[in-house]
Image 1 (cartoon, one colour):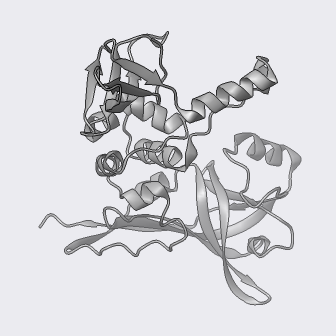
Image 2 (tube, rainbow, N blue to C red):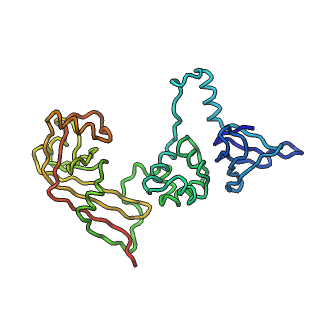
Image 3 (cartoon, rainbow, N blue to C red):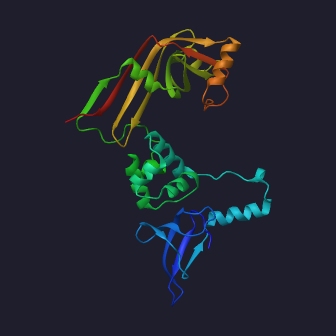
Length: 296
């Protein structure tokens, strides 16, 4: 008997041949896929170590069977194989886990699931049960809807307000730490059509906030002016968050060596596509605030 994570272990009645119990294989103890297995039973959602008997067999997942058929049709050339798609839930679970600073083992222990199953969920297109999603959401300090991406198009801040919030100013060092090295922020500029607030992918390089934009765009209006740049984070699950505001002069970066160095040190490309104009903001004022539960 050989199995892979995600396959089903089916235990049949020895008298009728009908399914007596089944569960998902969420952990392997041998690289060749031989028993024993960690199985999450469908009737109890509990995970147990199983040494299958003669009344058990493995039912391979449809996703794996289809992958085998595709490989069979294409041949075994590694250049034709694609990496597995973790799916939206897997990506969101992995992102939330890393944001909380948890290892897979720690997150799995909190969610009461096998670390091998959490790895499978993060790396494959899986469909965890509602009970597993609830435990994962609790372990990661978020909600099931957030893991499913249900609120992706909603503006932040619609969660329940704190009963006793504490609003505190951030130090300059804390502001720099929250700005971190890159992300998405908003630059406020004056344009011929009036004030505009534009989201941009930014980097923090040598204490300067830098972003790429297109000449003639609204964000390009920052060049040669004093502008405001803001970045924030809202934790809907915990009803808390922070914001940082930087104010200072913005200049275009035109020297070829400086542009090359910025491009080499950039973590990501602009989400909006190719942009050629580098803009640098040197903060003259850096302020921030954090809202958290009080100690009451």
